Amino acid sequence: MISTMQNTPAVRFLRLPEVKLITGLRKTAIYERIKNGTFPTSIPLGGRAVGWIESEIIKWVADRVAEARPTLGLQVQATAA
Image (cartoon, rainbow, N blue to C red; front, side, top):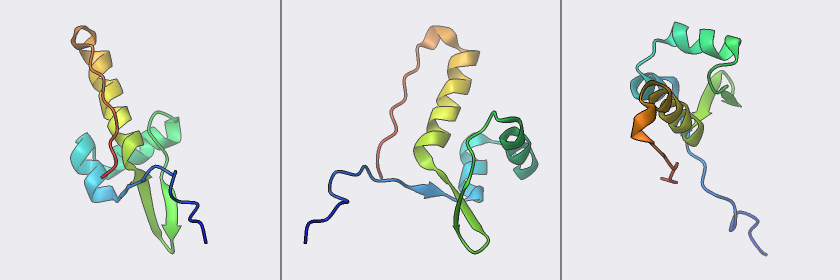
């Protein structure tokens, strides 16, 4: 049997406490930004659990830095854990 996962990049899900830590935002601010379409949406993981794709959160942070400090030319590449 051939695995279809061989060529699929690894995806890591972040739970809310990690997203808050990485972004510095409160839960309310995260959900307000999701509602406004300015923050990555969460993905249902089952039951009441949701998670965010790590690479999307890293890109969101990098975009905020690039907006605030355009002279830095920051380029962030999401890496699989």
